[in-house]
Length: 444
Image (cartoon, rainbow, N blue to C red; front, side, top):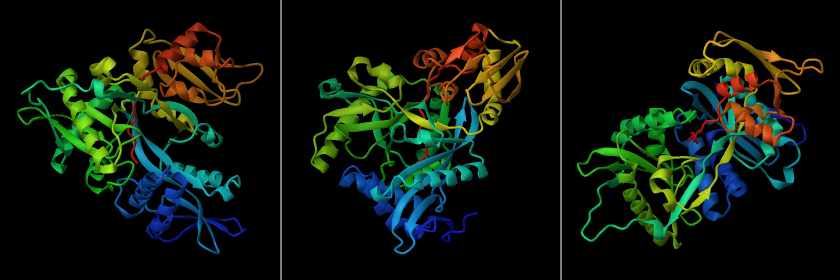
């Protein structure tokens, strides 16, 4: 258990010490992260506020010692840092621990010295100790591959409309739906709607009451991960859904990061009121900040009911980026989610089927044994020149299939060294690991 005292993790012997953070680091680390990660003055302020929140406000999963810091022992100056935000996600309803590294940064003069690698080695040990078999990070392309990550899960994805697409009320017409600020008493309703919504997704973040309360009442309004939460009510004052949106203008407007309705409510009916609210809110932000608001947007991943409800009235599309995923013990994770894999078999044309599948990753592999529709063994297996297996994936590309990001056919098209010798095996792998959408709203 972290005690809150400064804990040295490593002394490089050259004037640099790696240690864990304490709340007393809030000022220096906020300034460091704002300078490293901020794109402009306003963004630097937001990044600094996020850092300060993690170190000084009660977070539902983050410990104040969950930053690693490299500092100069003679001056105390921070030269490199990152953190780990623990959380729980779900794979087809099966929960698993996730460690989310974030705010990875190093001063320019200290880059290329392996400081980030040493910090990743440390937080990966924390993940093992705390029972978090999967690590997820958002960030720049390619860089995190060197620490065992693969871009393997949809991340955000947006669609935008403009003033011409804002539906106008007729003369004398009143809004059918009122959008008001959420209060603490609304949190059980929000939680129920969230649980209903994530059933569309293969992978989702498990959001506890503590997480909802933190985001509504504790998190700083200056944090880049603070979102205004609004309840949508019908004419009778009954809540029908909720939205969460940024409290400042992005490049050109206000973007909704989460919009959901309870079962049995028409998206076609409610969405025009939401769009008008967003447009008007964006104009308010523009006047406040001295900027022009020219758009409204929805961050709904690759697919979302609001995209269908608005159709061509969301003409600008920004395709999803990707979460970068690490699964160091692949057989262990597959055994953990085995009930979901067996359910896929039971509901497919392979119900009751038996087969051994040897999956090669060139340097290692998996042996999967199916007996009468049950996965009786998922274990490590080593390919050889004499036994290459039944199907092969280069490097960590199999993670893309595991998390529903790409189908086998897409991987085979993209990678010449992704191959399958037997059609039966390909069919079974498509059943076990289908392409399926996810839109994960992580804890920050």
